[in-house]
Image 1 (cartoon, rainbow, N blue to C red):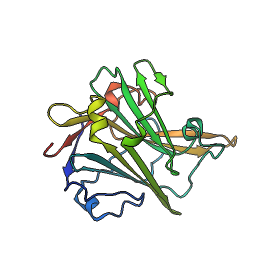
Image 2: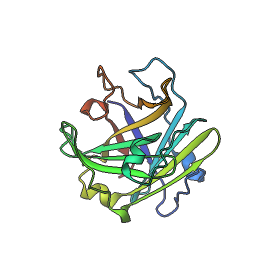
Image 3: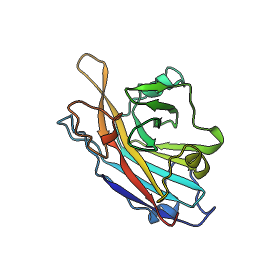
Image 4: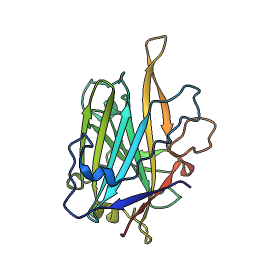
Length: 214
């Protein structure tokens, strides 16, 4: 299982604006070993970082992409589901009963839901609004997404283990236009789940975040 160490910074010194330009992000380890095990084409560069201050877990994605696909029908979860996006799944154990999903598009719109095995999705569930903040930023060549999750909500959802670890999946959906004009997703993941077809909703697609000094 892949492990990512989440470095700790001083409390109340971190903030997000969507750009990922706060100096404290330099303290975070950057990973970019993402792939699409089910597709032959190369995937654009994706950078991920995370840090925490004991009260909040901060996450940052930078996705290099000059041809974004964003469904602008409305601001519903369905529109997010049809758009380029980054994703974070969090679980309490390998049984996935339950686990929690955040899917965020370049406009900082979020599709959040609770899930259980066999793709039982509860789209009526939302991350507590006072415990999450999301900001994004778009340029001609890349977009950034920053997320802040309160440690209190992670604890209430039983997502932090006694050793300070969090079991997490990091993903990306990239929509490409096909010859018929329709858009189809390429599924990109940090951890290769070793499945024959694209699948994030499986225990083998998760890695581990290890919170420093927690």
